[in-house]
Length: 164
Image 1 (cartoon, rainbow, N blue to C red):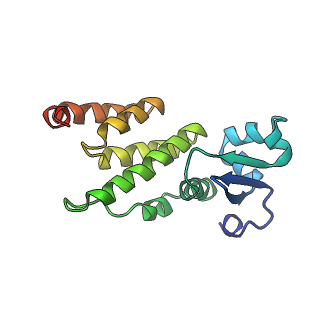
Image 2 (image 1 turned 90 degrees about the vertical axis):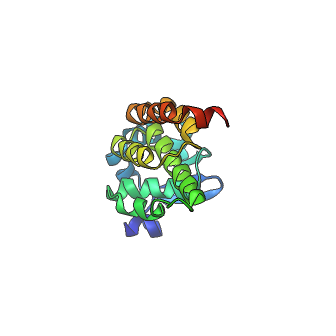
C-alpha cells in the first residue's frame, strides 16, 4: 500500500482530470486483465506508460486503485459516510454519486468483485429521487440485481415518481 501512496518504483501514470496518479504495472496486470491488455497492446499508452482518464473523479480512481492493491472494502466504506438519517438526504446523494462512479469504473475495467460490492451498496442506499438515474446506469453496467432493485422501487413509488 505504501507503494501506491508514495509512488515508489511506479512505472505507470494515470492522469485523471489533470491529476497524476502513479501506479505499478505488475499490480495492475495481476488484478485487472483490462489494464494488462491496455498497457501491453502496442498502443500509445503501452509505450508512454501514461493513461488519460476523463470519465471519473481523481478521488474515485484512487479508491479504485486502492482496492486493486489491497482487495479491501474498508477504505471504500470510510469514503462513504454512514447511511443518512431522514434529515441528511444530501449525504445520501453524495454516497450514491460516489458509488455510481465506482460502479462505472469497476465495470469499465471488469473488476467483478468491486462491481458486485458497488451494486450491493447502491441497492441499500438508492432513494426514490435517484432511482431513475441509477436504473439507467445499472442497465449500462449490466448490474442485474441493481436493475431489479430499482424497478421494484419504481413500482413501489410510482405515484411519487410520476408527480416529479
